[in-house]
Image 1 (cartoon, rainbow, N blue to C red):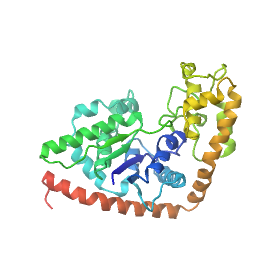
Image 2: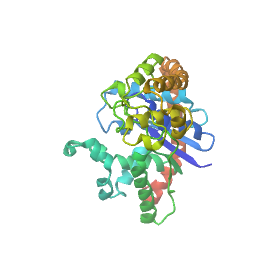
Image 3: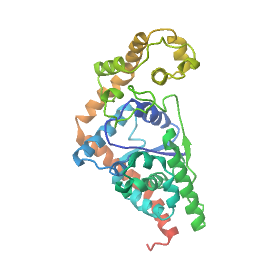
Image 4: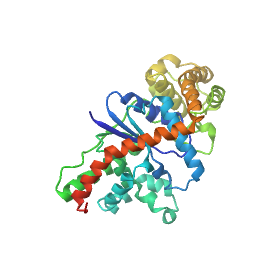
Length: 331
């Protein structure tokens, strides 16, 4: 069976975009692939994190993934820092990947902004750690959003260069999996920006911990325009907030944007928002309830992640041993 690797940063509570664009798809892939799901806490500290908050956020994201249906008994769910092979292989890839490759990474430019000289070395080099995350398990497929395709290309380039440098056919070329209508959910306050947990306004996103009343309030306050809802895709051009809300309805209902247009075209936003709210609550309320139950028992969550860490190491350590032998390290 092919193997998937996918990771999520535990730098805050998961939101609707994370769920529809990633976690829900991971759950559905569990019957088709061997899955390794990672809470990438080492990536998280490329920007400073409060230690207590990082521990809490790691538990919250683990709880959200379990509540959404990730099966930690059949697949691997763990915190990245529990497996030292990630850091070990990242250093080897620091010596394989080229500086020019990293200079082309657009996310570093976005995150560092005008303070590039003050950014951490980890923020600059973290694409090499991402390559190590994937290749430490010889993953064959990686579910990615559009904004992560560049990093997967780097992993593929690094795998190929390692194989060429050492004259081996060792690492596979991991393939991207870009899935579903919900791969890019935008902010409820600005339809041109991706929904993000780093946005200052909590009204820009639906959090996985939001209750029914909060979900309803956020959709009521979601930015719209004064026009009636369009009846065709052409009518969404230049209307990013309308397009986003239609996309959310399509993803939550496992339908299409065209189906949403056919159903709601010509109606007022207020009617559509009410039906969208009801649908979101129907989908998210059971997850929210299970999250609360899991978070009430942090010792259980820690145990699940510890067991996952052991299983992750059991997969990657034999691979790491072969890598060291290929590179020429003494046993």
